[in-house]
Length: 308
Image (cartoon, rainbow, N blue to C red; front, side):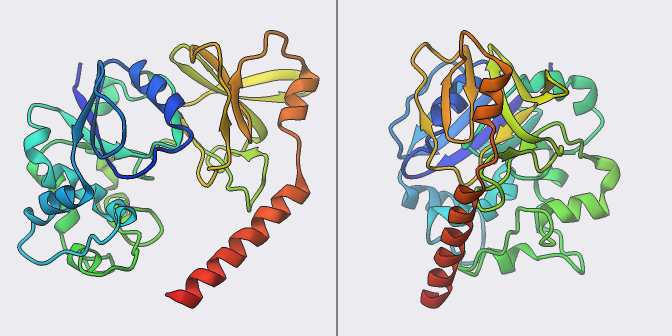
């Protein structure tokens, strides 16, 4: 089996989704998760924690480059994600693949999607940033440095305090460069669910796979997107589900995380009696709440632009 390590430099308070992230990571035992963090989490099983301050990690990053970098706040770390294989190369020796991702999500059965047959065919996987994987070799690990006309150059991204979205699609960053110049090396299947932000729709919409008014069921090591269609409950298995901009969610799971339900506002124990009416209620369209978050987001953006 091909070996995989996922890297998480993370500083500050853990997101509300961390508990379900943790159990879904522990249930993917063949994948190693490596943290560099000052957060109050401990190593266990396949999760390794290296304690360090943000400044100490900045020093690690700076030591990999021969020019002064700008890494003035943890959020700026996003832009360095494609460089982790280069910056942290001594920590990934012996692994076939390395990657990175987000913590405001829950994994399904990763290996059922990223099989060895798939891994053997490609160098870069997914690329959206919630869960991105690279083959561990020098060419792949340094491709973020390659200057190609029409794409961001890494030195420009790493010497400004502005967020350039160097790691993301649609900003001519690293993922776009892979997708558009090395397409045959990229696995870009969409088996995951990136759900709508509250300003777009308070109820869950899978922006990647098109289902609307959905919930998510986690059972053992499997994750399913579920909805009501023609009077029946239908399911679709997911590689992962990403819950961006949902810090208001509450985790009220009491009976352990082997079987739980994710609604737009809560992570709850899976109901013993689960009717169509209950699914419709949990996934209902709340237009007034959506409007509230839409305006809240606009006001925050205007305030931010005034002071920047």
